[in-house]
Length: 83
Ligand SMILES: [Zn+2]
Image (tube, rainbow, N blue to C red):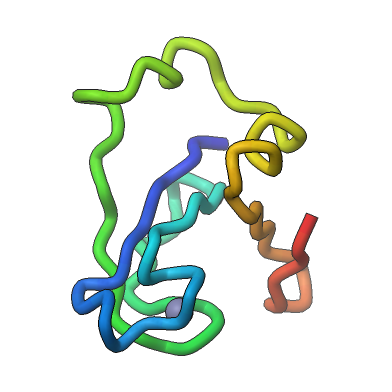
């Protein structure tokens, strides 16, 4: 499952999570996320393959946590679980 990085289109309107950007793993068949799952502020997908070296080395959850990211995984019931 690919990991996408999202950030609020207007960071000043977002919650602390999306105003700084967050990573989200979701099936490639799903349409792009359009709003923050936490505060519903519009978000845009950030293309990270251009200038982030970590693409070649996928971040583990523990790596992401230590880097300050919060990993959200969508569960079957539609809610997001904080790992
Ligand atoms: Zn938000």
